[in-house]
Length: 325
Image (cartoon, rainbow, N blue to C red; front, side, top):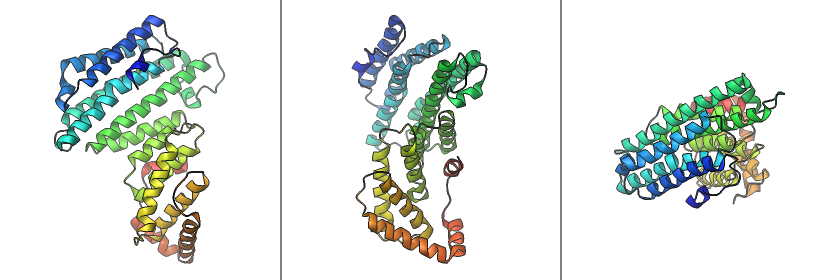
């Protein structure tokens, strides 16, 4: 988000001075981010104080039950206090060739995000209990009758986004070698899906998390689920097309000797994405021929294919959970 956009937004819906104070702090943090020159700068008191002031201000607004109209400030907190410093820090380490050996400072920065958003999640859930007395109503995203319908929508949307933030942070930690963060990222993305099932963004994030697993099948599945959702992620189509091209080049153009079952699933995914309107460079007739040939062979020898599947295809927990849902 450009720093200029943090100053003027008629959609804030908060008292002018309250919104102005919060966004002025965000602008100062944005300026401090531009001064970051190396990974050690994430430990500078000036950066830490600015981040703390911004997050404390936001928590104060939430404690005062001012959820409505916080969207732009919430986005500023995410970008300026956590996401942009993380991306800068990662660039510093990659440039120095020290990402694997000197990532402790970057991990500490991300764990501060875990602490902040965990606290924020508790506050929002407590607020929802106070106003509705029923956390289960969050899962219905305001469809129940009652005087707090708009409030339920607001709380559900906020909880959905917090789970996405936490999922992203744990995904970044997994990328830095924290293996235990993988399952935690899955948990938060699935919680986001459970809170607002029609939103496709959690599927897009799960696709990124599983980018190197199951020969691309899990990733393609989640990108397709994202594009099939009522509320699609804007970049989902581009992501799906890119992954489809990557998988097709690896599995078909290179003529690698893969499992027929794997090729069948990949081919079916690519054909399906074509009929969903996702533009790729693949020849649809060739894809259909590959897929029908593998399907014919599998139907001829189902027992052999079942054994091959058990030995070579291990679908992820998130993939299995999503298929059941």
